[in-house]
Image (cartoon, rainbow, N blue to C red):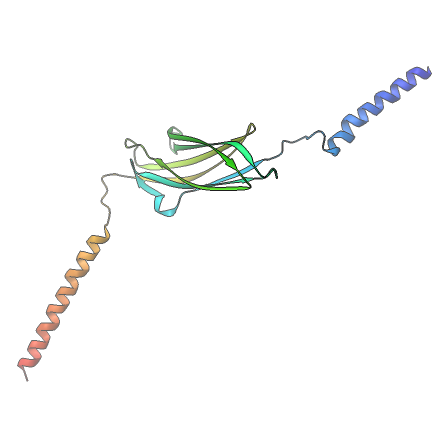
Length: 178
């Protein structure tokens, strides 16, 4: 009888250790520690581009693990049609992150894409953990005319020449009447 009581007490002690003490001691982590944070941003000049044009984007990856250096971090960048969800372009690279990594890169928008909204998505993977972010860009119709600064400069030159001619004529008329 005494032996059964001792076994029951030992069993209770093991259960107590497993369910209460170990999770709070940090030996067993109930949730996976978040190791990374990632964000992507498309600069304003690249928010609207034509098919076939380069799309510049900036990625920022932060090491939240506190280790100071994470090697073998995989960055996957995808251009996804917002309407269909189809992946239209893809690029990958492996980097090392020391506390904070900021990088700029370029992805070419394929020439055969139709005008419309697209998502540029970045997925960052390390130690079987994936974090992702996305930004939106618009492919514009390749046949649409773009207003060039040269056109405005030409119009401005014509207007200024007309004003100069009018001023010269006014001066000549004034001199003639004197």
